[in-house]
Each structure stands twice: as C-alpha cells, then as structure tokens.
Amino acid sequence: MSVIIHGFEPGTLQAKVQARTAHAMHQGAIRTIPTRFELVEQAGVIFLIRIVSNLVRKVQAKVDQRHASKAANTDQNPFLPYDQDLFVADISDTHVCLLNKFNVLDHHILMVTRSFQEQESFLTLSDIEAVLLCLAEFEGLAFYNAGEAAGASQRHKHLQMVPLPLTAEFAHLPIEPLLETVRFEGTIGRAPGLPFSHVLVRMKPEWIDSPLKGAQELLKQYLEMLQTLGLPDRGPGGKTRSPGPYNLLVTRQWMLLVPRSTECFEDISVNALGFAGGFLVKNEAQLDRLKTCGPMTALRHVALC
Image (cartoon, rainbow, N blue to C red):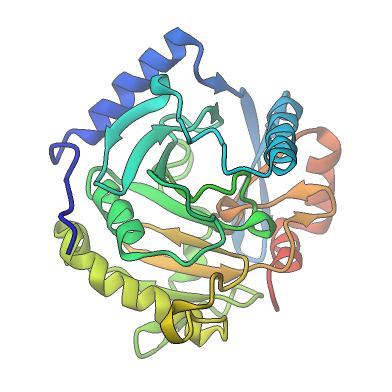
C-alpha cells in the first residue's frame, strides 16, 4: 500500500492559497476575468448569472490548447509541467494544488493528478482523498467536470474548488433551497424540484474531520451513485474506462451527481457550477436567452431526463 503524504500542514491551505494568489497576480500568471452578475429566478431557484466581457479570450485559449494537444497526439498540457507561479501546495503523493489560471472567482483552486490520467476516467480513492483534504481546510464547493460534454476544458484529470459563499449576496448556494426536500431511499436521495436525472448523498461530519478515513466511505457512495443512475461501473477487473460525462458537486453537507447529455445549451457552455445555480455568459445576448428560456430549462437541456 502506498503511503499518503500530507503535503501541507492542516489549517494552512487557505493562507497558502491567498499568499500564492497575490504572488501569481504580481507575476501576471493569473488572468483575472472581470464580471458583473444578475439574478434570474426560475422554479424556486434564484440563479446567479455572471456576464464576462472578455470570456472570448479564455474560450479561444482553451480551444487552441485542445487543438494543439490533438494535433501533437501527446499528453502535453498545462499541468505537465504546471506553471510554478500557480503552485499552491502538495496535497498528497498523487495530487498537487494549483491556482486556476483563468480566474473568474477569487481563490479558485485545482486538485491535479501528478501523472496524466484522463478527465473522463472514474474517480479514485486518491481523488476523493484530495477533495476531502481541501474541504477540511475551508468551506467550499468542490466539483468535477467528467469529460468535454460535462464542461471540461482539459484532458488531464483535475478537480476544482471555489470558496463559499460565491458572493456576499448569497449565504448559501442558489440550488440549496431545492435540496431541503430531498427524498431518500437508503443513503441515496433525489430532489423533487430538480427536473433532470440526479442523485444526492448527505456528507457525514466525520468524513471532513478525518479525510483519509472518510475517503473510503465517500468512494463507496460515489460508486453507488453511478450504479443507481445506471451509468457504467468499472466492470470486471476495472476494464471500463469511463462512466460517461457527468458533473459531481461536493460541499461539507452534500454530494450531487448529474449525468450529462451535452456541453451547451444553444451556445452557452455549462459545467458543474451550473448545477449549483451559477452560470457564466459572454455577452448580453446569452444573458437575454437565459432570461427568456430560464436557467433551469438550460440545465434540463444539458442533463439527462
């Protein structure tokens, strides 16, 4: 059994993120993307819609990187090697913590595998450990975009986390009012107000208090969630490589898994943050489209029903 190296002292990660953010900004390593936001209500949820003036630069950079990787037919990517100015801390012997280069939300971090693994692959025990080790440090939303159709921009496996609350105006995530009515069968629950395929489990405080022990239980819950939704499991001998595209969202209180059918609602890309109640649009036309059609309608379109 490999030895897990706790790469940062407990209780220090948040300060490291803040200090490294200041360093990266001074070095020009972070490309901060200014936004404003509007609130759009549908189906009992007040969605947070961010409007980004220069998102085109971010999108184009991701497209160029994706095309370059495919053309070279290699596993080269922004994480191998990663930019040292974005390095925050070692999480374990399998994962490092980096700052998100394209920064819409302050102190947005990535939990990246040291060696190349496909973003579409199943989460492993070490992935879950990395999530819990970071969630134990400060209140946040961890999430995973499993594949391009789920909003992932890079093939190299990486989980993400943003501090909570998302804004001063929201004490909780926008989607959480609907999670108060979850109906459970055993440990697996569904929220009647979410009009698409999903499952949810409640997090136990001891999983956060003891991340390395809690990861074993949370991994079992993750695999049970996939099975409940009828998504492919790893199969005999772990031969199945991917359960298909989905989004996973994890807070200290709950974990939500949503299978995906497509990346975009019309021309609006949706990743895991959409299922927390947050959207990112690049212009007024996209904002107007979300207002007209409704954010929940957009989520229903990109999920499975």
